[in-house]
Length: 433
Image (cartoon, rainbow, N blue to C red; front, top):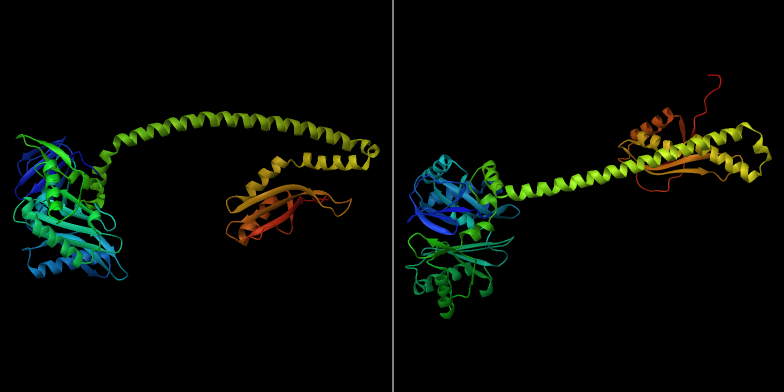
């Protein structure tokens, strides 16, 4: 999630980051195009809190705790950015702000002509680190430290007296000590540093170099976007990078509004994908139709051969030629005649129709018992009733009976529940009827 336009709101003013440029805008002014608004509320409380019971109850418990501490006057709005769940409790990273202040932002956002979604700046912390990594986010003279894994969450915040490196030595040490006291066990290689707004990317690198030289901190600088300014000096911000790794759930907006806003970023890729899929389906349809035509022609040729074979078998059956044949030849003609009269292809279609969706046919064979010379060829069907239901099996046999086939139980080769095997022979009709 990397928006094209970011509105960064601080107690000192409003900034617009757009097309590689940073410019000041008037508070509560109308903006053009979709925007994501990151707000550093002047009166807010950020922290982690252990909560009992279900995760849905966390916001209410945090609101009660913050109100009892008296840090924020009036009615509160609590945002839960991330939760680590346990068997009967959870730990939540949250931001609590004045409800009046939040509603003011929501009213302004709803007034905009395009999608405009708002999120507290602490929501950027939740998706930025993995494992024992520690993110230190500098917002002016405020330092926010955050680390989280699947089972633990650590957060601490300190304030410095200035923005120079020497002003940050003691606050950074205090921040690290607080995090280690809460259980963070990471090392120097796991520290990531970012600035919501810095004078310049080179200035931020110089700051980290001074912290390292003083033995205070070894940290890796996160990717920052360099921005042009209307007044000349350049600036840098880590906000686009943090937003790119933040889940859409961190945006404090209804699900439908988030979906509509996110969909704009995927319109062109989605359109390209649909085009590719359409071309692929067209090619598949063309070759599939060609394959179908080939198979239909093959079946028609096979039906013609079967028709000719039936005529020849009937001619043999009506003459006394079979009496002059050798026994092996007579037997072959009898089997061939059975196959011709009872078309295997038609028989397969009959069995499939009777099986429907509740019976899976595994094998259909034209076989002959080895029980003697009088044994007649028959079909053998092996299959499995999908859910093992006897009703489905009875329906299957009843449908075969209606098609002129009677079933005699045989020993199935499959031991699966619901497996069956039957010998299928033509129903002998009563001549008197």
